[in-house]
Length: 420
View 1: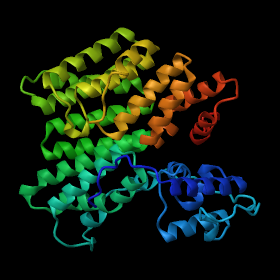
View 2: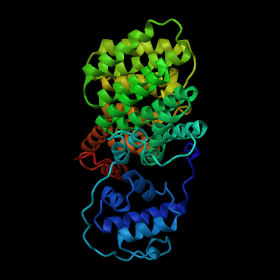
View 3: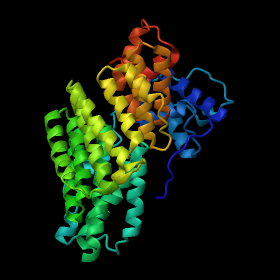
């Protein structure tokens, strides 16, 4: 499971031509990207990347599945094959699958009944080292917005961790619970980003419980941060603010937090800034951002304690988001255009580009906004296409274009289903 963090690569012209062919055949069948993705049991973002040549298709079985879904022989997908009209068979009804539906189902019941009832037959010794590596990978996938892979990885990992905390020796139990807490924190973060707020709440609640059993109070507070994010997604600002303030008050009472504790405290102030901004409380939002800046200055570097990515750079990325939420497009651009976020995750880089696109949209700068949304999409396609604020801004760009948007913008709006 040692998957490396994804990096940018050169696009092969052959992949671009293959993708162009797939798109043409799909459109001839009158299938949307989402319908086509459902037929393939893939995500809409995967189909979009294939059609743009970003995602190469090298496996024979995958190529055959694409051909079957298009009702053409595999030879028709070759870049050298003639493009004759494809059969006009009407698309079949499809059911849409969220990338994290499997993970949501996984946590719907008790995670370790077999162990409790003595009927667990998995057996075998527990390797905390192997589990630790798997948890690290889940976080890498979460930061890269690879949610289908997150769900797939957890099918075996989560039951293994729930079993481990119940059977390991007493001296290893604290670490086992710490790994379980980190896993539920990752799952909560992924659920939030895919707008599955109820599942995010369940995952965050379990993270809090596991963190407490690990004996790490800072991990408890980091889990509360995930709970706050779930409340924000549920549009419950009062609960979000209460949970965040309770944690910040408790943490601020300590004078020995160190960088890890300061990272958690600063991240919670950033959530309070967002809650305040969305509630129209301008002064409070600015105050919370300033508190986070001061904490980041005390730390003096970008860190990733508890996978919060807290540090000076991420504070400024949040400052851009807050400025956009408050309608201060000029301030957002002044801050954001000078940020170098290359050291942070793809999710954070994509979020910065997306919010700069929103700022340019507020300025009615259509070309600049479109370019930034496309750049964000190349890094974090799911976020750009599913985030409500992103879709609203893309819709505004189309309407500003007088219903005659550029092809890039029109295709982006289609991928994000922004006009519905």
